[in-house]
Image (cartoon, rainbow, N blue to C red):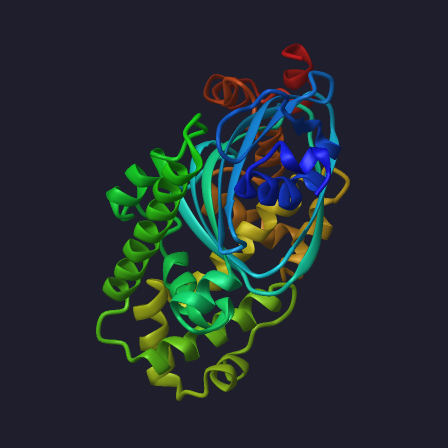
Length: 345
């Protein structure tokens, strides 16, 4: 073990190994003199201002808390295995709810260009395959896909368990000794998962486990085919269900009809693609499964409350230090986000 490794506890070293390679390119580097548990990264003042803190439990799960702002456009690249995350947004890109959950079931490499002025402020728990194997005896894709499917329907609802919000609020960087930190963060992670499972059971009350898995397969098919035609017969084949049962069960599990769910997923994909300012509206529409940009723009405006070009402008400033006032200014004046961002840089 070299000198650098001896500076950190096991949990801190594990977190550093997991996150350092992804954070350094955007200006977040390991802090000197940090005596608390986990790893604390600080902005270098040139590319980034703020901080990012992470604590990891033996690759079972990580807890993360951050608040940082980029001072220039920067590429963010990261490799990820399978994980399930529950996040409490404190400040982000027009959040739909205070808490959200999502599942990344397959290892992948992701890359995105983050704009100047982008601010990220959230608390998150990321559960890994090892956690699911120890708790459920299954890989994360099998253990938590039905839960993730059910929670998708809560994107636009304020029906999250308030205790989950409170528990996530207890996760903060603090200078506490290892055993106490281990009990605190492990306890919160397990309690949050227990509450999530209870929520999943409540949302899917009366739906057999096998039927939940069937709907989860259909949802996976939708997620993987948003850019093309999604036909009912393909969904029925993925779920191995008849039409009547499929429609009823899909609504029970997700809280949405198939049409509503597909539209919602396409709009969410469009929001992510619109943050890429090199991509035309026509290309965004095509990537989201719409044959015509006019149809896409009309549906986007109906769902979001503004056309995609306006949303793209607002997205540029939505991460900034005072997004609420800036959003109101952009909406009222129609000025471009570029001049708005420059005037505050």
